[in-house]
Image 1 (cartoon, rainbow, N blue to C red):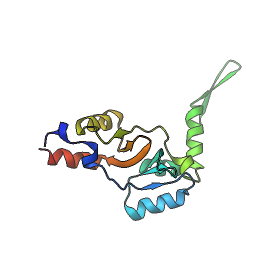
Image 2: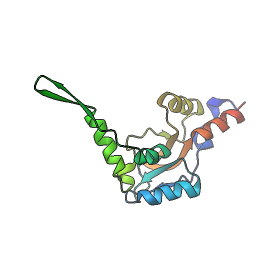
Image 3: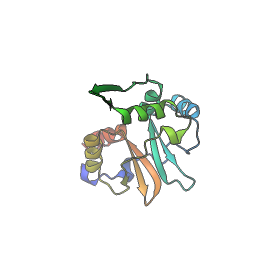
Length: 154
């Protein structure tokens, strides 16, 4: 089967792991460990996508806080990296999925081709690509799914 004929619907996980906004970070970490997950979708009651949590998000939550530096120029103090510091502080203090998730998520629909999926994942350096039908989650594609489909398509 040529790559252009393989669609998201053919390779997606139709039962992706998900949680709601109020799920605790401890519960999320437990599920990642027990279910051998690399990512989890955050959805509302109607299964509308709100965000994604990855292994990196959980690890980042545990890393050391990088205090921003400041440069003094005459009588003016210029903070360096203040926005990044605030993001790091919020992640470290995350108590639930809402605080930990990345809400800026790229998505595809079920008719997106394997070639396009591979391009999006490669160009954007993402590992999890939710598949939506309108606003509702119908699946998720991980890099492993893409690699498997590319091998099978040869």
